[in-house]
Length: 279
Ligand SMILES: O=C(O)CNC(=O)[C@H](CS)NC(=O)CCC(=O)C(=O)O
Image 1 (cartoon, rainbow, N blue to C red):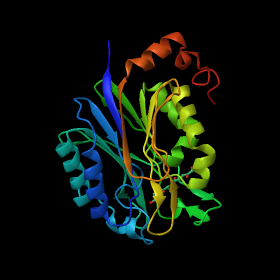
Image 2: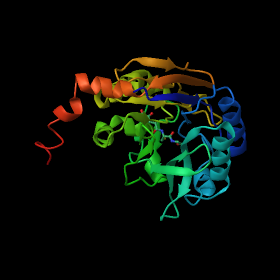
Image 3: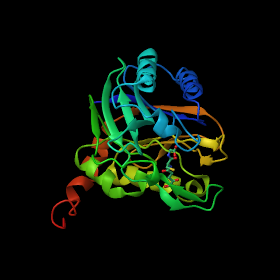
């Protein structure tokens, strides 16, 4: 039986002003076709990005309430879709660090699921930022999140998490058929790894991948790769954005393709590392 869902990705050049970012998201969501079952995913850092040190912490809200969360919940309702807010800063038990939270809203504006980025990007990259030290300001999450929306089982990852296939495998073992990977990849690492990593995650988990990205040059000079992607569980790229513009991607999908592929090649059942070789 067909399980039709529209999957959309929003590519943005977010900046430090949350109201400017919100206004852009509203305009980009307005470009999407209407559909009764529709998931739209916003990139990492969509709400606040490339600001001065401390801005995310200053704007961090208690999970479940606050002006930013209310505004994104209202956008989900206004545009009548399931909306995954790539990340938005939320408060943690440590007053000096925020959590990078992905928040899933229903078309009624209810908060259905939250996920805090587990793997933090502490890396040397040969670009203008030179060193990334996300762990200095961000507290890592501790729990996996698989949200269920009727037949859509949404595994939530964020950006750098995509480099850790164990996370995607654990979500696949719980029945995932769509993986969201909101991102803000660097241009240097994006050119080298972005398509390959995301196609591999789709193929090995037999899931659709929706990966919206930050793009272009941000107010602080940081450069992000763009090339937002929607990929099917056979690894085919269904839609790809460019490396320079704010834009939306949207495709109608049949989630039953995951099941059809799994019947022909049941890799989740063949996987001996879940049981026999578990340490
Ligand atoms: O800092 C913010 O405001 C939002 N967060 C990010 O942009 C994060 C941490 S710096 N970016 C990544 O994880 C890029 C990963 C990457 O590029 C790779 O894995 O190669």
